[in-house]
Image (cartoon, rainbow, N blue to C red; front, side):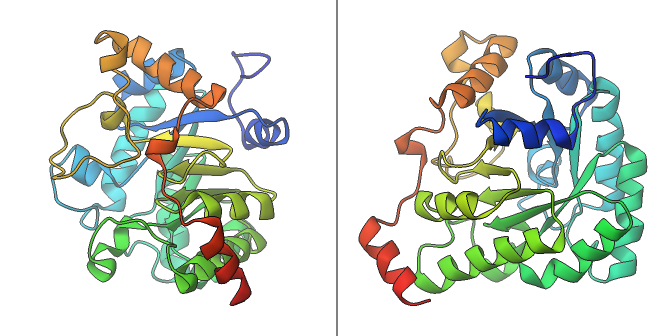
Length: 285
């Protein structure tokens, strides 16, 4: 998507994609081999996610993943994709106070990340401000936040009732005001995604959040149809490998082109509230 593919992908590139309404595809990455393949097939944004706790380590949630483990995988991904824009997760309880957030963010940046990602709402605003003041680029994450699994109980769609709809919208606006550069929206209805994306000036990346975001991200295992032990296959995933005759490179390219063309996500990958309920929600503001 860059005019010169020999240049590093930057946050300014991502802003330009948004300005030009150029949809972009992103993937989680955990090692050098796959990140190298992703880059060669045109994936310029990669997330070293704490999802590795489930996809790589075989655990039932992400909460036991450590900053040290994220840094380890960030180094590997950076070796494979030296010019990509890398976002690394700050894992559960690695940012419970401002000093700890700065300390752990610096570990990930030194490991090769361009940006750190935090899960949570407006309570994170002081942390975002502190990191931004110290030249750390921050990505927010609202909607379904897997680090909160012990509070929410299951990996289910968020924002389907008036209270959570309004809270997520408010959180998104507050986080942008505090300095986040990108916002991930996970497992929320199309109507809420559209309203957030229209309200913000920063790029948004969706996973299970409908087609209105500037970018789409999936866990790499999901585009290849690799079993990660989940009892139920998420509605929003699509097996691009099976559609590509088992060719990994073609699967990556198909995912990228499907996002760019608007063929992914399709309606059957999305969650909806209904226009009547949205009007009711707004009437409650």
